[in-house]
Structures are given as C-alpha cells and as structure tokens.
Image (cartoon, rainbow, N blue to C red):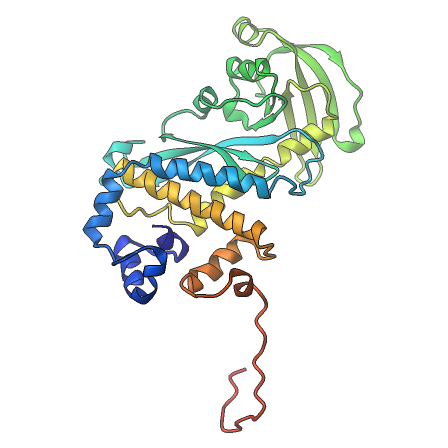
Length: 343
C-alpha cells in the first residue's frame, strides 16, 4: 500500500501490476511472492486500521525529533498548533456508511498541526456532518501551548476549557459578539493595530460559559486590505505577534492541499470504513516518512520533489543521498558524429 502511494498508482490492481514487474527485487522488501488482489482486498477490509494509526503516530513522534530546531517565523518558545478539518468526498452509492448529504457521502479529517515542524500532532476521523468544534473535546491541551483556530471553533465553553488547561487560544470573533470593554492597551496603527482591549461578555449564556476576561484585537492587514478581529486569552504577547500567529494558520491549509494532491486519498481502493481509514493512515505515514528522509539525509528538495523522484526510482538499489544529488552530464571521449543531437 505504501508503494502504491509512492508510485501514485490508481488502484490495487495497478499496484500489484507494478510489483510484478519487479519480482526480482521483492525478496529484499520482505515480499516472498506478489500477493493476490483478493488477499490484499480482504486484508484492507478485515485488518484493523488502528495498526496503521499507531504506526503513523510512532512515525510522527520520530519526525518531531528531526524538526525540533526547524526555523520558522514564529519567534516564541511555546509550541504553536493549528486546528482545522477538511472533508474527503466519497461516492454515495458505494460508501453508504459515510452519508453526508442526500446526494453525497464523505468523512471529515480533523487535524492538529504543529506549526513549527509542519508535522500533524493529532488526527481524528468523523462523519462529514460532525461540527468542527467537537474535535476540541478529544484533544489534550498542552500547558503554555498556543492553539490557533478559525471562526468555526468559536464555542466559549470549549475555549474556556483551553483556558483552564493553562494553554492559549487564538481565534476570530464574530461580528455579533456583544461585550464590554474593561481596559484598553497601547495600540500602533502604523502596524495595523486599530484597538487592543480586554473585554467581558454581556449576554448571559456566553458570560456563564466564559466568565473571565478575553483580549480582543482589531487588526488591519495592509497586503489584503482586510480587517480581522481576534480573540485570545493571552495578555503577554504583542498584538502584532498574535496577528502573526494567526496568519501562520495557513500552513494547515497547505498540509491538506499537499496530501490531497500528491497522495492517494481522493480515490479509494476499498469500500468499507476500515479500508478507507487504512488507506488514509498509510498515506499519512508516507508523508511523515518523506518528511523524516528530508531532514535525516539533509535533502534540499521540497517534499513534492522528493515524492516525484521516489515515484520513478522506488525500486532502484541506490543510496538515497546519491539519488538526490545533481546528476553529472556524461562525458564521451570519442564522439560519434553519426549520433544526432536531440538538444
């Protein structure tokens, strides 16, 4: 299944056909014989996806060791996480167990991404119609960590849970928010800070769910000409730093885009819930393995370039460092002038 991901095969049959073309190399991969299509299909249907979930989490733990000193624009010592979700669309007639709407099926991939390493910290699957904020009930919040959320996670009771965990949240306020100003902090309009305030909720239910003060920052982003209102429980960072942390939330959108474009999680090789989750967890494992290889072997290529090179050379018996070195132009001492030049 991992070879199918790396070589970007379209189906199980396609993957097995690729393996049969390299039967002389399968022994060194621990594959004595090419398995039958039915054998692999039954394994995907019956073998629990949690095996691959645990494998992926072990790989994630290993990857974080290589990216711990990763340089980022986030100039703070605290860990910073972005939480978001993406929907993976499925065919209604085939994946009836994942009913989303009357015309389509789908599952939702909830992810907590470490913004300093670009490695996922937490992944949870749910039906596509489950609201994003329910993921906050499962996540264990790290003390002094920052959690950057979009407006879909604005639930005061769950935000207060983050606050009581001695962690910090950064999200966007709704335009209908009713609150009163308690204190104003110095602002710098030249840096886009329109106001920086400490506020309390006015309405009864929001005030009972979040009884403490929150910090409200109105920020004007010059490049996009857009205005944002941020809510946070952190009163120590500069207002511009809060805006920068939220701006870096786009990394989780790039993560979703990358795995959808470069790994096989749009078309599935099995129809059961177990088979779908197995394929997704193996795809995530492949992503993390490529990320580990990039750091471990000090590769200069991007993750996309590494996957493309591996897709055509996965069976080559070549040291990985040599595989990603710049190829040298061959020098022929005696030129054959009958040979035509293509370039």
